[in-house]
Length: 300
Length: 276
Image (cartoon, rainbow over all chains, first blue to last red; front, top):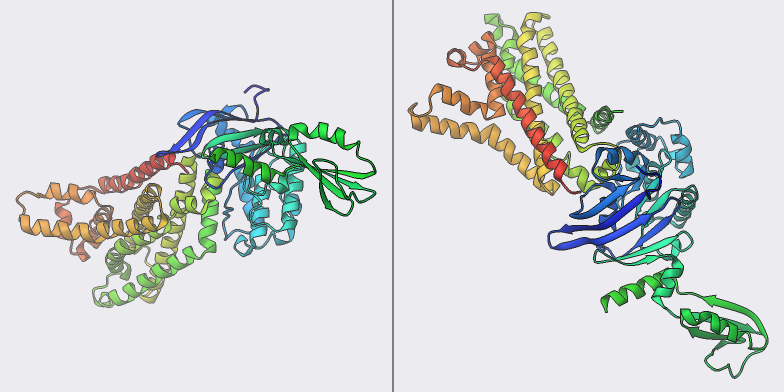
């Protein structure tokens, strides 16, 4: 294992199910401390990609390496000690209690159970630790599942639609923990539909469509590539009965200009010439809009 | 650290929690007791220990019941965990698929063994106490019956695991498991009997019949129990047969062990190749 190997490394990976290409020639690298959001419709290949990284399925072509080890080798199996995985459908054994569930998974990683109580407190289910999982709410099960993924300070975290069906409080807790781990140097791959919520967390966004990677970059990269219009809004001291050319009156004292991303800086400079500006707002397209734009292009 | 014992412990705990152990123990004890008390009525005059007679009827009962319980325990073991998503999570841990299989199988075997020993053991004790006290000598064939029953259970667990590894859906696994049970426990012997009657010993000779019997774990079990012990053979009406039976206990035990190892080995191969 080389020191410089990225924690997650996929090179030209293809996985077919009969005639369907679930993952089609996808390359992907995730560095330590990087949080990558995986977006795409249901069936776009997100879960397949995660299963390939875990070695649950084998690719027909290409190579998958996790923590420097080729998936499928005994060394990669040992390296799974440093991987945290939260599956799409959280399935835990209903007859075990929360504490027993966590102890079971800790033992499988060869860990002691010393830190388990703290971990259960961290995800906010310490008081339910002695109750059977069968009686947990969905949110509690998801929190427990997150706790198992965090066992033993993982270096790679794979989260498959982790916040689906969670209440807002659980989501916030969840994002806080993910942020903390990213800052601690964990490589995180998170597949989700809740893109808007993750804008602050994403270092990079990958959009999948029909098994192919159709976009991969930082929010800024994607914004430029999507080339969706940016809105500049001005609040003025006086109400412009006749707005300047190209601007639209929004209401009392407010005007708006829509321009291309590439044109943004020039337009902002021009806007400064408008008299009596009290405030300038810039509205970028959200991740949701960019995502929709990429898919529209793909369909076209 | 070997993760297999962790899985064995978990399966046993599951079995105790969801009352599997209790249910099987109670069922086996009740049936053994009713058979024992009903069947041992005539032993008062011939002075045969009630356990000896009970072994005969109990082994016939076990042939139906133990494989059925084993199938119920195992048909869901792999396909069910894949279906629920627990298998994907489990395999994301540093554990090999063969270790998962071994852990679950041994856990289920422990449940079955525990319930059989407890169920038949309780019944055996109750029978002897009701008929004038403990007689340790009579326990030998009874203990052999329990041991053979566990082996029989293990071979059907193993078949259940193979089915569970092969099929894509839990409902299919349940259907196939019942089908296999029905074939091996009921149909195989009925067909064989029909062929024997029609054949009149022309083609199917005694050695050939012995070989045919080895291809069914329930027949191996029957031979082990009914001809394996002199007293039992006599009461089972198998004394005549056991003279002709050329299969030694060693071969029978070996055959039964093969019925455990081979399907489980195949299950391991299939499970190893299976995409989740």
